[in-house]
Length: 221
Ligand code: CTP
Ligand code: CA
Image 1 (cartoon, protein in one colour):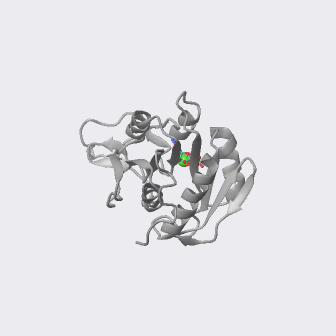
Image 2 (cartoon, rainbow, N blue to C red):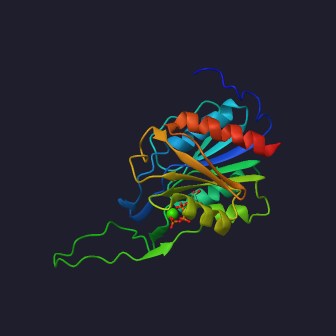
Image 3 (tube, rainbow, N blue to C red):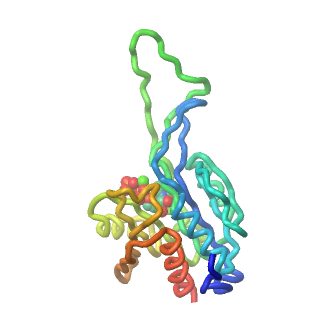
């Protein structure tokens, strides 16, 4: 890769990134998941490391190589991700790209669920997971810049503005996932802040990451 034009500009800073899906166990062999590939979060972790930051990447279950110079913490569930985020503090910047499962099984079975022969379907009761981003925004060690992501299929900007206010983040990076963005290598995002919306042209996820890190550097000074 070409030398980062942002080289050294995040020196001395700690950037915390979450990426990928979470897996919520139903029983020892089954889980609830989503289609997040982790690619955008990993690209941001890489761009931040190239800019000289100390980077902690809390990664859900994905099969991606760890970017050079990045400290990776692998987790599976939302609860594990929340604990890993907490353990990584303090940080100057947090970028919560992970597609955290909204719900987990209320009572994950300790043994594999079995068909009972009657055709009866087992009930799957769900409970809501804690909101890691909102928790970080309200934390005594709140990073100076907290960035959330929002994958939406309709009313992209409107939903992002609502999330910005509800969670107390500084930015929500909204992307339209009605197409094939999840798992794809390109992304078109809108940076939604209290002062307005900046829409970036559709580009490879590495370029989107670079542009976002550039704006983080500007926001930190
Ligand atoms: N997020 C989180 N913890 C959760 C759910 C979401 O930290 N339990 C974070 C995501 O990492 C992301 C942001 O919140 O940065 C927005 O996630 P999103 O799923 O778009 O928002 P939700 O509040 O879960 O709303 P929705 O009902 O649209 O899924
Ligand atoms: Ca959600």
